[in-house]
Amino acid sequence: MNTEIQNTFRALADPTRRSILMHLSAKEMTIAEVSAHFDMTRAAVKKHLIILEEGELISARRMGRETLNRLEPEGLKTVANWVNYFSGFWNIKLQNLQSAIEEEGNSKK
Image (tube, rainbow, N blue to C red; front, side):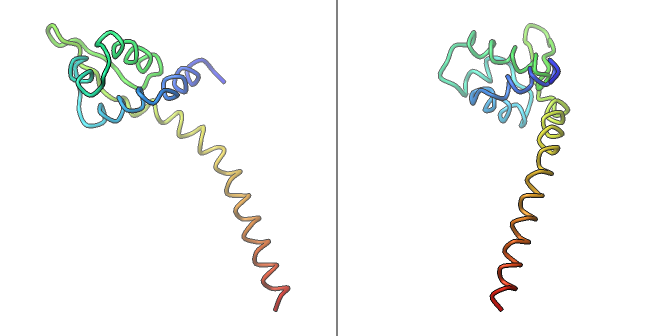
């Protein structure tokens, strides 16, 4: 697994960071606005934002004295593609289960 996707999974591993992503999905926010949703210091929130940015899940841009953070949905596409690859295995298991149930039903008739 390349470093890029490792950083993305690292960012998603923490429930606080996943919650931050949910808030940023509604609108761009400053660190102060993000911090208002959590019982932690702005410095702690900033550390979470840095990890999310390293995972390419958010971007930050300066606007005057403030830094605005925004969701970068393209970053989630990498994770979705990775999960979708493995969903094929799940679908095969479900198809096998369905076939077994149907065969059992047919043998009882």
